[in-house]
Image 1 (cartoon, helix red, strand yellow):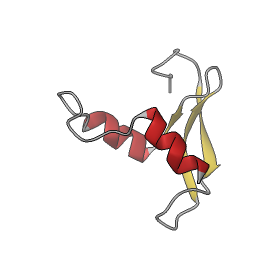
Image 2: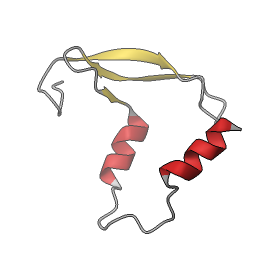
Image 3: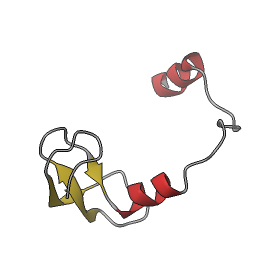
Length: 71
C-alpha cells in the first residue's frame, strides 16, 4: 500500500491512544515509513465524509483558548 501524502511504504501497525474517550485505547491502522502518516478506519471515514463547504460552527479565538488553558 502506498502513502497518499508522499508515495512511501505503508506498514500495518498498532497504536495506543490514551486520550480516546470511547474506552478503546488500542487500535490498528497503517503508518508510512517515510512521513509518518497514520491512516485508520476513522481517518478514512472522515476523508470520505468531508464537508463540501466552509466550517459554519463557532470557533474559539486564541485569547479565549489561552485563558481556558491557564486555569
